[in-house]
Length: 447
Image (tube, rainbow, N blue to C red):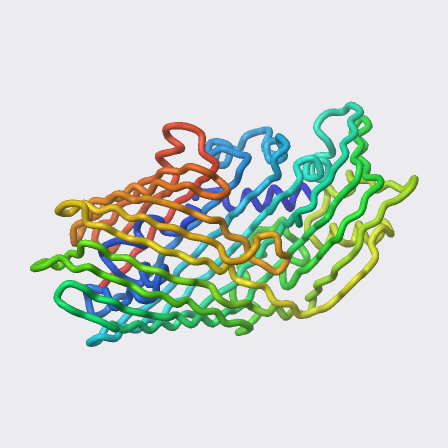
């Protein structure tokens, strides 16, 4: 089990990683396909007739336990820090790769085709006592007894998938001062691999006797679901790269509207604002090793479960097999193919021209589903403000955010022509502790 937890963190912390992907650059005055990813209605605001995305990369890790220095510095007390304190562990980590893409604008219409690959790893509301006992075999080699009660569904999950997006946008109103546009993106989903372990309504007693850790008097509802390469080994990072392995098996939609208050006698605007609902859809995982099973865990009387045996588990399937062998699981419901919902969010923003080439953007992201659901890919809520200096060929910006999981972050980014690079947390890391690490870069061209 330790390998599962460590792999989930290390796969995303081997480089500096924003929980808001492409924070700052996605609301740039240099409108392009990245803006349309945030709101498809932005396509009609492209300054050029054509845009080609070459390659964009964004990666992030946000949690409520470890600081930036711990994430990238390989702290020796890594495992203990994850499950320190009494607050449940929450972790959101993901990688997003935007591949070749093309945008085209003609008259009042604009069109786009995009490709992307995504990885998500999440720990949701994991009880620290239970997590520490299963992963580390207790803290000290002394006698310890803990009563654990957790009503929330505790989850450990990982998934990867690919997307092909088809976007269309149109001006619906245009005057000398104002413009309103609407757009939609229809995404074809290619599920790659998936694994989920959920434990809800957990109660029990954990005892550590000189390193021998046992669970007694326990009950819980348990879900195990997996498909593809993650079923066999959660500890191999290569298993997360099966982006298109499952073929076309899902659809999702982004819809949005955009408003511009134009600046008279200028290519600039006074306000550029938008509202979008993204990731409305789900994908179905189908593979020869597919399994989704709900169990009831019951350990009563003098019965006990040895928690030390989970330390060598490499996959969620290994954890399931250990529990099945123990005889403490009773099957409630089983199936093969299953659907997983995308992280649907409502996002809104406003970019305001303060003076000359100085702008400021306010951005809000609110998730629309509960992260505790076993069939849900997790995402966190975000509120950010980004001051920026922007010209046609150069841009500098500093996103400042309050993130649901990682708290306060501050970063910096730059754009030179079609190349950009940035981080949503590098400044907060430099001036003090922060629970997030992130970075992104990319290149696109227009003509």
